[in-house]
Image 1 (tube, helix red, strand yellow):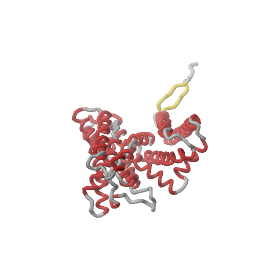
Image 2 (tube, one colour):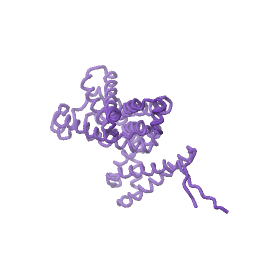
Image 3 (cartoon, one colour):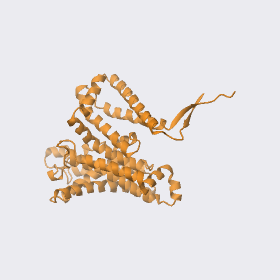
Image 4 (cartoon, helix red, strand yellow):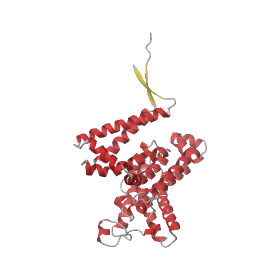
Length: 357
């Protein structure tokens, strides 16, 4: 006879071993998926490697694609560690992009670094305000954060569609109207590229800085203690004398600000015009990245880079190995499930029952 018991202490080595096992299982299941689709498994994985890390160009491309995923993953970490189930990262990305674009129009002509600083600051502010709105609805009217953040996603996305689909931000020319995009941003508003690359931009520096800031806040500050305590037992935190409504407001401001930076990085670092379809899915994928990263900033950084490589290599998989594009989100889902199972399993052990003589 055997039974499952929760571990009193969880060894970090055991957690790492479980995640490595999750990787192996994920690749095996992915291989089965590729096999059933009729693709050449070895050619598919070679194409994934070739498109994600075979040379400096593909590595920079992978890191560029990872940048918004790291930021939206961090936004997930900040909220979920407090058991605040915010699904608003998608809308906060849009809000950040829109606020930053508005700043690029308002402050055009200022010295470059002041100009870029204001664009970045307004992007973070746009995401923060949208996040704070759901906190106000929760604190004031007890509106469930899942409902409010999902509804706000739709509102902000449709608002951007209006602004670009014949509204005041619609670009000049038939192509701009057809694709619902703004005019190209000025060269002075573009985030500078790193290492003489044409892919990796300053947004990656913002992502790394955000990882370090969130790590310090969550693990080494009183506010981070409140976030973690709120996730364990919010009622006990209230009896301790903490204003949990204020904590909720602050953490949603932080979560929204980080997600807003993802919108800035995509518009001013990669696409160089405001276009809604290039932002689709960044927030929702970020939730997966944050979960796979174990709801830790450092883990999210690693998971974001992995998913960035997957996004970069998927193009090669479609071209070289003829893998259907729809399989890539399925592969992401497989790895999410295996990592979630590994995260839970790492906190339990199987023990045998002693027989009574």
